[in-house]
Length: 173
Image 1 (cartoon, rainbow, N blue to C red):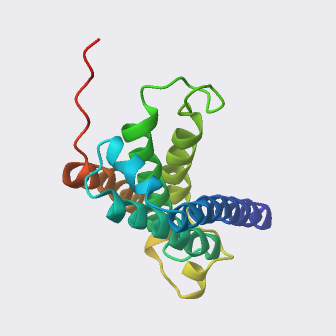
Image 2: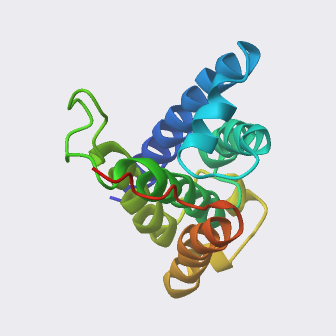
C-alpha cells in the first residue's frame, strides 16, 4: 500500500512538473519571436509586460523540474497554484468553463491545476523525493504543508496581483 501511494505521488509530481515545464517552454518560444507575449500581458492589465513575460516563463520552466524531483514540494505546488490562479483571475475568469470553448479559452484547465497544487502540496511529496532524501520534515506534516502551499499559492497570487495588475476599464457598449 505504501509503495502504491508513493508511486501515485511521484506520478502526480512528475506529470504536473512536465506540464508546467512544457507550458513554460512554449513561452520561451514566444519570447524569442518578439514582443507579442509582453504586449498581450499588458493588454490584460499587467504592468511592464516584458518583465511579466520573463517572470511567467522562467517561473514555469523552474517549477517543473523542482516539482518533478520533489524538492520543496509544498512550495513548488503552491507556485503552480499561484501561476494558475493569476491566469484565472487575469484572463480566464470571465470565459466559459471549458478550455476548448471558442473564440476564448475557458477556465477548467487553470483551476484544475490550481486546486491540485494546493491539494497535492498538502499531501506532500512521498518517499521517493528530494525532500525525503534531504530529511525535510515539515512537508510531511500536513497542516504545515497546507499552510506553505496556501501561503505560496493564494498569498503569492494576492501579492502579485496587488503589485502588478491594473485591470483594463470595462469598455462601454
